[in-house]
Image (cartoon, rainbow, N blue to C red):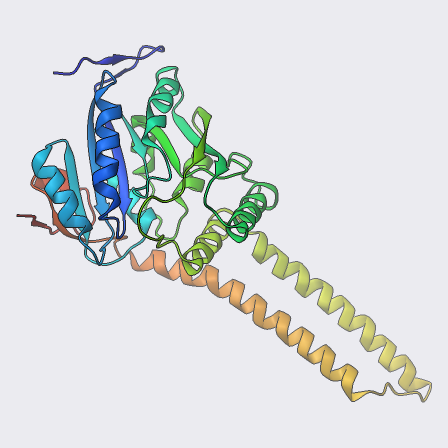
Length: 338
């Protein structure tokens, strides 16, 4: 049995959970397993690897299930449809057995060799350790600019100063943070922003994000845009407040213009100009439609929460998960992988 790793503040880590959401990653999983095994076997801690297949169209689940047959420290689950990587992270955190958990993508852009540094910071008493991207290799300029803009808005407009300026989606959290997270059941959420918002003792470790080894990313612009909207609406009422102030200012401007029209009419100089009237109507109409769309985003999310649908459902699992553990997974009625 592997020796228990002592912590500087008196905590010990008897087991580390590594959670990997995966979508069409059949080529990357074997390489990631070999690198994880090399790194984790070299440190004095037991570990488990939880692979959440987000209903891939390739052999991602078959590959992870085959790895689980070779190594009983591996657990794999497959969603019944594509629910997104954040749902995969949430599922993994709900069934993780470790004293702390690392969330690591399957594309090998986040090197598993950083895990010992995250674990060392945890042993020193940190409860949330973020692996912050110092450099991002293989990313185009548009991706870097839009990512930078998103994090600037979240930090400086929404007010979430806890988020790293360059972003972080590779992290380690303590068991107490996992248990606290289990109390949240929001459906349209940015998990990384939620963990930063929750507080606890947090620290960052820098690293270089590497180019994708195999395949192409499923993280499309549409998904990025939805995450941005989810992040803003989940942590700020600023868009609604902006709508209110826009309405107030538009009403004041309309009142002033009405007084101007009345004054000119009294002097026998009615305001002329079909074009100016149409411009005003189109501008105000556009603002109204925009504000209705913003309001609709909030209303729809309220409806989605009220329906209480599960964030994900499980189609299949590997034999390592008991029914007791799966009972904590919403609507888990899973079949076992052969």
